[in-house]
Image (cartoon, rainbow, N blue to C red; front, top):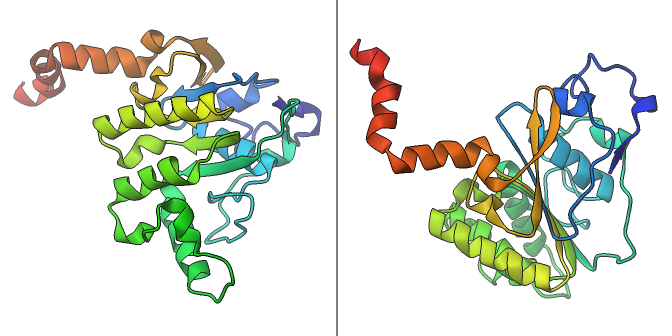
Length: 243
C-alpha cells in the first residue's frame, strides 16, 4: 500500500498527525501474513480500517457484500491510500473487527429474518446464530466456517475474546488458509497470535514504523518477563502501594 502524501490536506489533523501515519510512505505486505503491532494509541486500528475500506470492505466489518452502518466513525485515511494489487485476485475476503463484530452478527440475523430463496447466511458461519454462542465461540465460528481460502483476510485484534488455547487453534487455522492460497493482515496484542513463522511484523511507534521479530516486540518481552517471574513483576507493580 502507498500513502498519497501529496493529497493530504494537513498533518496536524487526525489521523495524519499520528507518528506512524505521518512518516508512512509505502508498506510492503508479506504474501502470507503481515502483523501490525504497537502500543495503544499508535494508530493500528485506524490503519487496518483504511486498508480494509480501500479494498472495498464495510468499515464495521464483514464481507464486501455487507453495506450496513451502525455509526460512521471511520477516519478519512482510506481516501489517501492506494493499494497495489498482485497478479492473483482473491476469491474470498473478510474484514474481522473485534470491536464491531456484534454489529456484523446482528446484521446477519436481520438478513436471515428477511424472506430469501437462498439458504440462511448463518449457514456460512456454522449454522448456528452468532448471538446464541459465547463471544469467543462466535469469533471462532467465523475463522473456521466463513473463511474459505484463496482470500484476503484483514483481522483487527481477533484475539479479543479468545482463550490462549483458542489463539493457538487460530494459528493452526491461519496456516491451513495460507496453504490454501490466502493472505492475512493482522493487528494484534497477542504474542501467540503474532507467532506465525513465515510473516513480517510492523511495529507502530510515535516516531514511525519499524520492522521487528516476534522476540523483539514489547508484547513478547513483557509477557516472557511476567511468566518467568510473576512474583517479582507483581512486587514491582504493587511496590508503591506498600511504600
